[in-house]
Image (cartoon, rainbow, N blue to C red; front, side):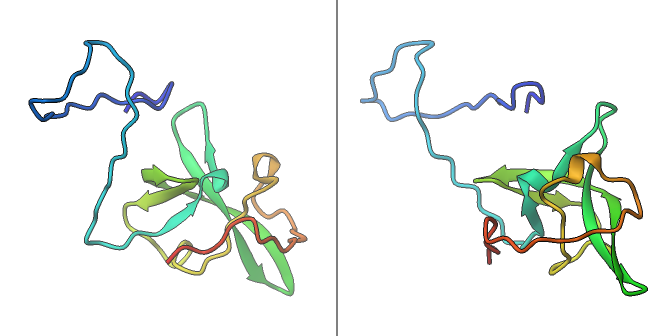
Length: 125
């Protein structure tokens, strides 16, 4: 994938009766299948840094306060506003972990949080 414009080259084998012009734009649906379940987070939860690092901010509960903590992640496939997290997951980032979706661009580790409930991101099964 070209990270600057998020495009990629696809080669297709078409049926003989398909009439296409070289260089023509087409619409296509690509179905990706995986036998393995993956943890996904809303695309808005992912922070991409200029040095190539990617991270999500999670909610840490302790001492009666909710605090922000950054977790570096490797990204997998993305689809329909959600991104798969590749690599080894830890107790810090696992199924059911609360991730920060809005306001995450200006956080620093340890910031005290006042979370707001939102139904903008439905959990996908």
